[in-house]
Image 1: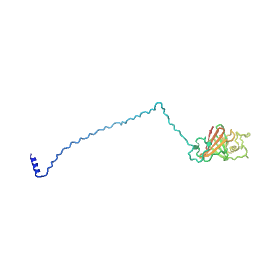
Image 2 (image 1 turned 135 degrees about the vertical axis):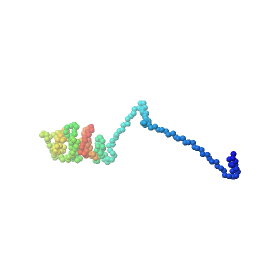
Image 3 (image 1 turned 60 degrees about the vertical axis):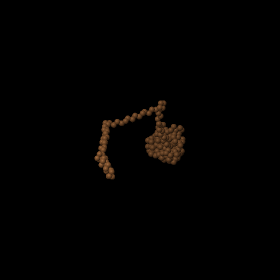
Image 4 (image 1 turned 45 degrees about the vertical axis):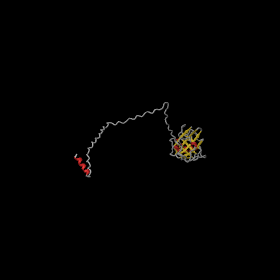
Length: 237
């Protein structure tokens, strides 16, 4: 009651207002967050993914995919085409490379040596060069100049001790070479067939060597004379 009266008197006298002193209120305690305890797994367990099997519709058979390998006969950069009569020679470009001369139909003489019918040694006479190529049984070849002419004997030697005949003796240019080169008779042997010209001939030079196609009746014999001194024979019937 006394306090109220005092305040009334002060207000009446125009004194300063008295600001009541705030009373501090204690804040409520902040709760401590709970700490989760993580227990490590003794062994990691991964989820297992199971793929559903793919099933073919009823009545449908899976067809395998077949990749066909194709081999081009030319890389398109050869300036000279190969002769069309050589088209039957397989993998021509890959074995022989690009042609470096046009094909020639100049006559070529041939004679087999040794025992047939699977002959593995030959002599070839190229009329355009007057050269004789000797194809040895070890698949190597050697060329020689043909020095025989019509003024010389048909048989240059006769080891038979009998009148010379062909066969078994080679004659003319083949026979002269056979008689004059040391060891050639032993390497080549005698002949079973007479020398002759191919019925049709195609000769063409390539980067890797020379290719001869000798046509006789229904048979084509391809002789490849490679630059490394080896030769191969392919017979097509």
